[in-house]
Length: 450
Image 1: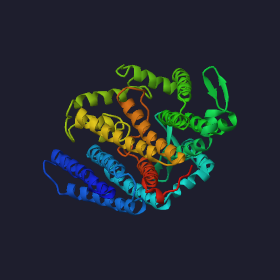
Image 2: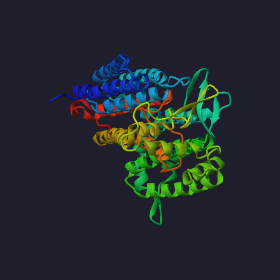
Image 3: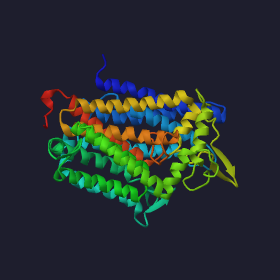
Image 4: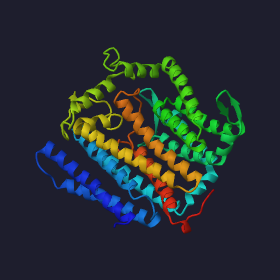
């Protein structure tokens, strides 16, 4: 029977095959011939994964054997689809740029594993307030003059020279670390102490105050920068961790009531959010098509997914680009990022889209299993928070693209185009593997924290 690391090694083969087969299919469709370049791309992707695997084998030998292969499958789907999206004259080479950022992400992934191996990630607890300040401060960067800019009504990214990144990707990990650390120390008081009002026991402000201050600051900054999708993700993760830490359903229930009240106010009093809500309710209303934050993007996404049917149109068969006055214009706005799920659904159909979501479900399930195996509360809460970050991101973007919820601008983890997203998701993966390694080690090699 194969050991954990050998199972991980075997699991990387399908990811490399997806890259090879995907690029080969695109070459056949676009050039009517099979190019050996597809084998080169597949071999390069496998080499990167093997290098990361060797680091995992040395630094975290007992870590979960399935998480990294699942992430590799997601990354391979993203690279293939981004190459297909950029396979048009005048369009950026998204796949090449994504591949470069993947190399950076795997380097940071390896450094994180080596630096925090053997349970050293537990020391992050000692710096929780510093980490919280860095996390909240990073969320504010896009609003600073000179480096931040407004795009589609929101301040999402920071521009420094030729480099662009989204600080919220760092912020999400920092806030999860703070919440896990703080709730680990104060969960008992949050449950047993406090004043009961009707059916809800309000925890003492001495313990609940700092938690609300840091989380509230993060949410306030996100509202200032108008990152509604990221705000929703943070809110969902906060409620999930609060419930896991306390076991009290009253906390998430009260949180959902507050969310409903806040969503109603923002949806009726903030202009660009109101337009997004109208577009969600009436995606095919032509009066909303070309309004700022209007329904054109969502309507095109729904048309694209419907066109894919059950098995899809095939790679390089969907109509994405048109040329107007010598410039490439996308028929599905931002197909490489916000709308990449719609493109995947169009070209691989319901079967391919379902397969992608199944991989995400497996990834999230492995993350939650790591949380159940962890031997200390901080590790349990950290793994739970990181798994829920991925879950909420997938829910927010897929829910928006399919018109389940109002459309917002977050990235599909490991798949969508974006350097900061790729890099920080590999750091998130490294933290999950570190927790898993400590949890799965024989008892003689692991200390109990509490």
